[in-house]
Image (tube, rainbow, N blue to C red):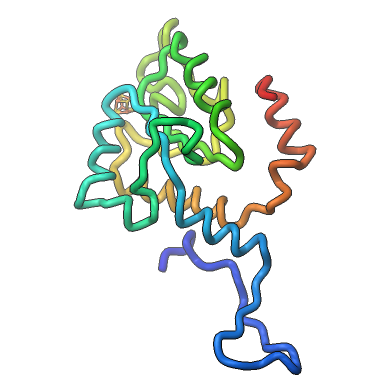
Length: 185
Ligand code: SF4
């Protein structure tokens, strides 16, 4: 089992008086986290060559379905993982932001490749120099293009965030302040 996909629970002794087969004790946070982690629904926002690597990621050889994420969503309202891959022109920025805003909480963002992360080789007036200028990003996957194995590692990091997140995080002052910094209500 990989380091980043280790379960975050401990085996505890049974309390006195409560015994029997199948006894299992956990917290609501951890049960919900387990469900969220293994049922991430990605929305692929792919504009160029990194999108081709994403196609390989979804196909039989790499098979993202092994991690519970084979159900792609092309509606933001039925997605909780925004995967941004490719060159994002400044004109596309408001669209990307609208897609992010239309996704329900909780949601995570994976930024794939040099272009989406920093503009890549396109240091030009028309290209957004990193999507984190307009929306918050949870995990960056470096490369031009990143290999599908790297993207799988990125998804595993997102899974770790999803499984360990407190149920109160999205209502916290810190989270709201972070969204305010982006001007997102
Ligand atoms: S990072 Fe490289 S492979 Fe990915 S979209 Fe940019 S130029 Fe294409």
